[in-house]
Length: 378
Image (cartoon, rainbow, N blue to C red; front, side, top):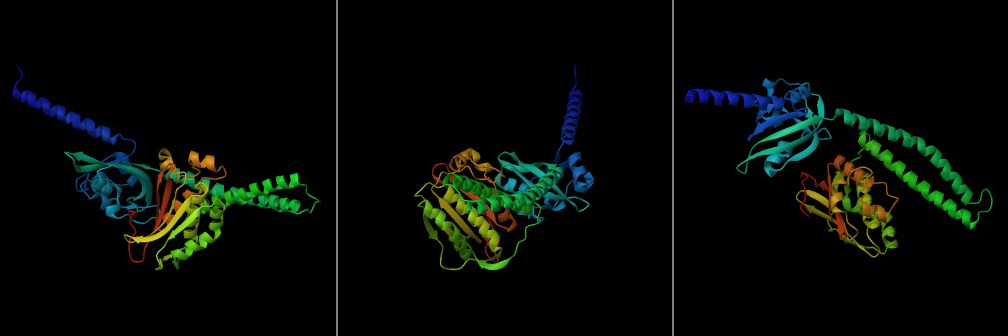
C-alpha cells in the first residue's frame, strides 16, 4: 500500500519535473522572450534575450522592465513608459506588434520586431509575455537596396533626359515635317518619359527618406497657406473631372514650426489621390481643425474607397488596391508610403477611414504649438 507521504513525494517530484520542462522550453525559444508580472517587473527572461541585450540574468530579474530595458522609436527618440507596447497591452488587454530599438548594456541600439501579449487571469491582466527578434540584418539589406535604387535612379536620369530632349526636337520639326501619325507617337513617348521622371523622382525621395538624408527646414508657417498653395496646382485637375471642392477652414491661422515643402508633399499626395480615385462629378471636402492638442488636415472624398482586405497594406511600398489599378494603371504605389514616412519625420500622424464604393477620408495631424500630439477622434 502506497503511503500518503510517498504520494506527496511523488507529487513534488512531478512538479519539479514540470517546472524544469517549462523552463527548458522557455529558454529554447529561438527569439528573445521576457515575462513580467502585473507591475511590469521582469520575472523570466530567456537565454536568447540575454544574448541579444548583453546582460546577465541576475542583472534583470526583479527589475522594472521599462526602466532597465529602454526603448526608442525609429527617430532614436526614447519612448515614454505610457507609450511602450507592453504598457499599451496592459491598458487595452490586446496583443501588440511593432518595431522599435532596445538599448543594450553597452549602450548600442538593437532594432527589434516585438510582439507583446497580456496574461489575463479572471478577466484581469496579471502580467505580460513579450517575444522579440533582431532585425539588424533586415534593416541593413533594406539600406543597401535603397542605396542601389538611388544610384540606379541617378544613372537613369541622364539617358532619359536625352530621350526627352530629342523627342521634343523631333516634335518641333527640327528634323523635318512631322505627320499627324508621327506626332501621336511622339506624344506617347513624351508622356512615358514624364511618367518615368516622376517614378525616378519618387525613388530618389524614398532613398533619401530611408537613408536619413532628407533635410527638414523648419520655419513658422500657416498650414492654411500651405494648403492653398497646393490647391493652385491641383484645382485644375479637379475641374477637369467636374469635381466639387468644399473648404472647411476656420478664419484663425494654424501656425506651426515645420517644413512647408514636406507638408505640401503630404497635402498634394492625399488630395491628388482623392481627385484621381473619385468619379467624375464627385465631391471633395478639405478641412483644417484643432482638436486635442493637434492641428488636423482631412481630405474626404466620395470615391471608390479602399477594399477592407487591402487596408492594412495601403502604406506599403509599391502597394496599390485592385480597384485603384483598374481606375488608373499609371500609379507607382509609392505616394502614400512617402507621405507616411514624411509625416513620421515631422512628428505627425497619418491615418485613414474608408468604405469601399462609398469614399475615403485621409487625416494628417501635427502637434499644435506647446501641446503634445495625440491620436484624434474625428
